[in-house]
Each structure stands twice: as C-alpha cells, then as structure tokens.
Image 1 (tube, rainbow, N blue to C red):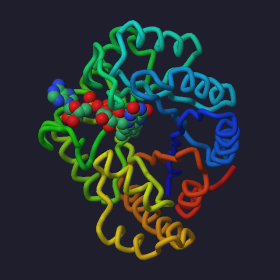
Image 2: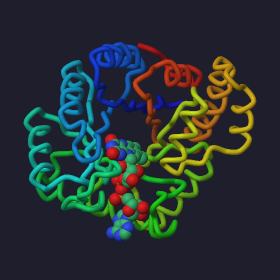
Image 3: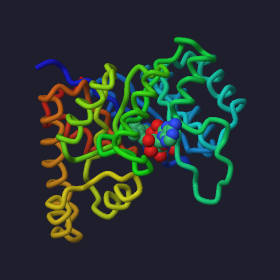
Image 4: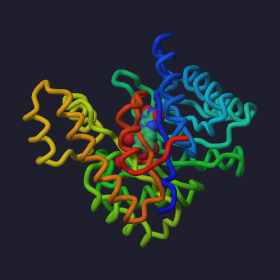
Length: 279
Ligand code: FAD
C-alpha cells in the first residue's frame, strides 16, 4: 500500500502553557512525517498574530506550515497585509475560508464568500500560494440546497483553489457521493477528508451541532451508554474513526487531514492502526 499523505490542523494557543503543549504535540506528530500542518484563524482577525506566530514557528522547525485565512469581517487592505506578511516569510500554502462571524460582530467585510477570497489571492499573488478550500460532504448548514453548495465548491476551485479539505463526517458514503457529484461539475482537484477523532462525547455533539456534521445514531447511542467512562469512549471512538479512515483510503481518498485540537494521542493512535510508520 502506498504511504498515506497526512496533515494535522492546530489552533493558535492563547496561553503560554498552550504554546508548550502545542510544541510537544507537533514534535510527537512530526514522527508521522506529515505533508503539512495548518493553523486556524479566528474570523475577523481575532487570532491574526497568534496564527502568524504559530505558523512561523512551525515553519522554522521544518514543517510545511499553512495558515488558514478567513475573509469575513476583514477589509481587503487587512487581507492584503496578512498575505504580504506570509509571502515575505516564504509561506506558500494557505487555507482560504469565509469563516463565521462571532455573534455580535457586525461587519461582514469586503469579501463575502471564500470564492471571492480565492480570486483575491490569485489576483494579488498569482501562483505564489498553493490554496486549499473547504468542502462539505454533508453540505454547509447555510447553503440553499445541496446543489447550490456543490456549485459553490466548484466556484472556489474555478477561482483558483488547488485542493480541498472537507468538514469532518462519519459516513464514508457522504464523501464518495459528494466527490462523484463534484467531479461531474468539473472539479478535478484532490479533496482530502477532514478527520475528527472521537475522544469526548459532549464536545463532539457541540461541535457537530455548530458545523452541521452528522454523528450517526448508532455512534451516539453507544457513546451515551459509556457515561463518564472516558476509556471506553476513547476505545470505541478509535475503532469507529480508524474504520472510517480505512474505508476512505481504500476508496481512493488522497490523504487524511486530522483536526487535532492540539492533542496528539487520538490522531497518532489512528495513524498507527492504519499502519503509518513513525520516523
Ligand atoms: P464559503 O465557501 O464562502 O461558503 C459559505 C456558505 O455560503 C455556504 O453555505 C455556501 O453554499 C454559500 N455561498 C457561497 N457562495 C455563495 C454565493 N455566491 N451566493 C450564495 N451563497 C453562497 N473557520 C474559521 O473561522 N477559521 C478557520 O481557521 C477555519 N478552518 C476551517 C478548515 C476547514 C478544513 C473547514 C472545513 C472549515 C474551517 N472553518 C474555519 C469553518 C468555515 O469558516 C465555516 O464552515 C464557514 O461557515 C464557511 O466557510 P467556507 O470557506 O466554506 O465558506
């Protein structure tokens, strides 16, 4: 079997101890030889400095580091300044998103959709950046219809995206069906599944509620039945997500992108079960 192309997503820590924890996490995950690591960006620029600092530190350690950039709540001038800063530091890979405005934050900004951000990046920087965009096998919760969301995905690719990472999901068929439909619309870029390990039931349900990802009923029922038994939750989560990853890879997925939440254990355990060798 050919090696599985891995990437790991982190968020910029706010406190010094979070910074240390993240350093330890990525040192551990580096052993799995990821293709790249990415760092999230708070919509409206709330983590602008933190994202930059984290990305530059990772790049200095030898990782291919990709900052996320969301356009909602930002002016073109601000986005321009951020992009120039990344370019000056030799960063060539970016995850371009619309983002979600935190409640109470009024201004949408000058670019309303990720497709506009992708076009803006291409217009300002030509081919300097390798651009990833988000894809939604279970469709974005605000989309008018599945078809409209697929068309939006195709629009982002047409605007210049090189590849995509999906929202997480637990139903492999959703991914393969989405991919088939996207291919019919002429999308030919790699679409890497986003993988959310299961380690904490209430957190999983909260996140899934927010982003519209479906947790299958049989998984919810089993997780519920474990109550506070975290060991059993982790063990069951590991089985479910490893099986999902195996099906995705066997079905031709180009790699796996892990939402690490700055931890290592779950992503590492899944990769090991999939046969990824540590360096
Ligand atoms: P878009 O592609 O712009 O789509 C947003 C919605 O608008 C969809 O419903 C779409 O169908 C609709 N739409 C698009 N164009 C049009 C149009 N012309 N007319 C009408 N409707 C339209 N959020 C962050 O804040 N920071 C992050 O770092 C971050 N990282 C992420 C990483 C990944 C891999 C993923 C999958 C998501 C991430 N998100 C992040 C969350 C993301 O910002 C939200 O899901 C957001 O709601 C949508 O972003 P998007 O880039 O997919 O938006």
